[in-house]
Image (cartoon, rainbow, N blue to C red; front, side, top):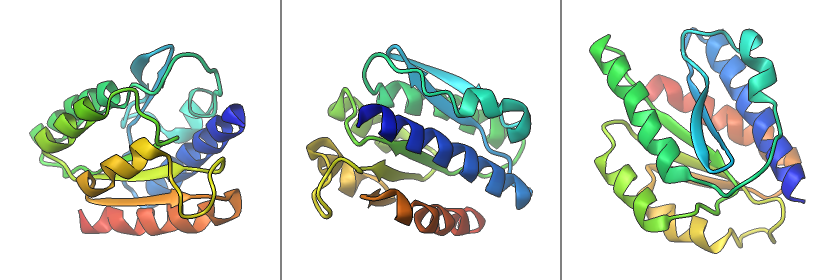
Length: 164
């Protein structure tokens, strides 16, 4: 089930990036593999040119969400220097390696951070424990318990982009 969640998250990220670009909104994508956060798609690169990187489902390591949020702050600062507003959306399995460090990154962020947890291996209404611990820290948080509701959730997050 873990690889199914990774595939679901990767496809959701690619869909979200493409939808945002259709609204003339630049999207940078930061992912992680083997316990390392990396910029998988810079904001200056179109989704169609980064699709292989965005839909890769290589696995290995944990979920270093704090590192990804830290790297996202670099992207946010670059946008601020160009007078652009930013919104950070995390799409994860809701099982970050380090809850305390994630909380610190959220509190120090200069951009609003929202969270979408892919919880397809959980009973509806029962997100992973770590995701539940972090719910109150995010500006907006939600879970997807089945792939069928993912498109609706992504659409609701896309509508947020115009507000931030």
